[in-house]
Image 1 (cartoon, helix red, strand yellow):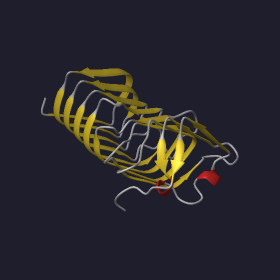
Image 2 (image 1 turned 60 degrees about the horizontal axis):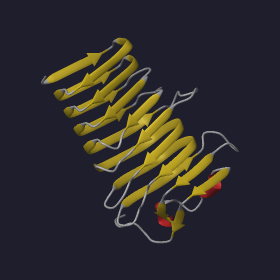
Image 3 (image 1 turned 90 degrees about the horizontal axis):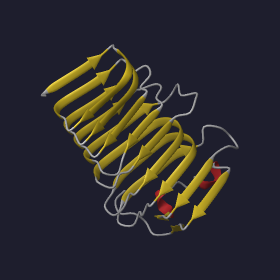
Length: 209
């Protein structure tokens, strides 16, 4: 299918796309329950301005360009490890999140990922490795988990990452080795609890700026 646009719609049921092919797919200004993509090839995927963005799950897909923009409330954003994505912008999401919300990102096969102005109860990042290009700025989350992450030879930057609530933030590292220069100087002081499992923070610097 060359193009699909869903606009100003109440998607109250689960929509599941498998083995699909879209040149362009736009979901905007809608109320969404659950949309899943599996084994799909998509040129441009635009998911924007949704009043309640519900759950968006992407599994084993190839997406040239993903824009997840200005979704004021969402339940789940899940972008798994078996996806191949070229350019990703996740900007200005979750400003009205009051209940439980979760963002899972596995950027092992991504080219460039930019995440800014995001609020979620839990943010989990898994498996960024060599030559990753990942930028996070103005993130609010009470539970931040980094799993299987290695920042050597990568361009990974965390800026202005803070818990949503004072004295509640939990920061966890699991099976990860990350350079200290990935984070701002006061990053660890912002979280009430910092936990390590088979992990370390090293003093090497990632490449790039």
